[in-house]
Image (cartoon, rainbow, N blue to C red; front, side, top):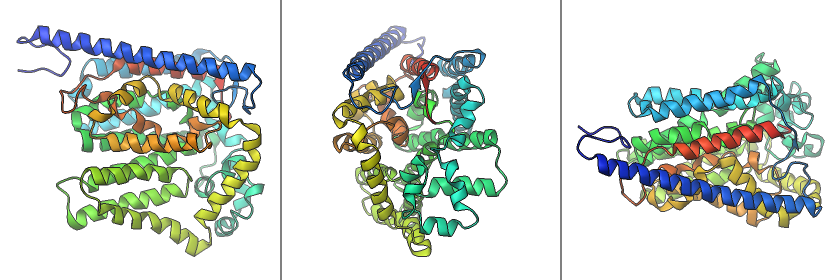
Length: 455
């Protein structure tokens, strides 16, 4: 009887040991590759700071400021990481029912995000909600008439918070609605927003299961749950955007399943589009994630599903435009104008184009290196290519000038999907890259200890 992958059997221990040795060697090689690139990037960042480059931040490659914060709450994150890694190493994730695994993935991701946020104490859950530069500062502008607020959103964008100027009205309206139903306490709000954002992990796992199979999804769980970018997911409206994007792709995977045809497939494709349209009311950049959906449909030879998803995506955007008068295109233009006047003169595109990639390396962690190396070996390549294209375009267009650790949150979970891909196409499954996962968790703990973010 064959045991779980990565564990020796009575019949072929030499082969299994060779596989384990090879896996360990490859993980160390990927870790060293990631480390070398990261160190080179940090050296370039230090050079930019020393040269007096216009970066607009005191904590390049991120936005915020550096400090050193360590105390009793700092023990929470290492404890959560140790539990998640131990559970995976023991093979428990290979044995439990799928529904239990999804529940565990959510609990692990939520615990990880909260543990990192609580390094700063309770303020880690409230700081983003009390900042004058964040969405909460605009609740008074909504008042008792959200329709009027949306109608004149673009017109009055210059009077809103920095966060609201760069986004559609969705985030402000969500906070307003939560206040209206009586959720006003900042700690409770912070917990609720973080809980919603953590749903991205089970949604991504569902999409990976539908494209790569259940084994790959199970082994991807620790990589996702302990991702370094969790530093920025707590109390983040961008994490909710990431959740909507993940739900969109999960619905698209379900629509394009070979066993689902006709109206059943079109219905799920329409739901995927509807989710994309709702996400677009929260972010101007998330429509780029739709490229992953388009590539998925073509890869699965279901191109006509793009029509259903396209119609679904237009429904929320056009409905808001017709019913309350908010033009998504005009809002995008206003956001770009604000970015041009507020960011462009003070942040060098030449330096930030490279420094943003350093932020990417640190935020996504060592699994990124393994994923890029094996991108051709996974059926989930449309996700990685779609998300990667959005990031490359952002850099080449000069739009990445600080804050990508937040702006790119909807794309990060898809960039490491090939970390659990076979070493060759259609090859045997590989064990969870626990070394890379652990190193990424350490990177997150260090970043949280030395970086104070405005969020």
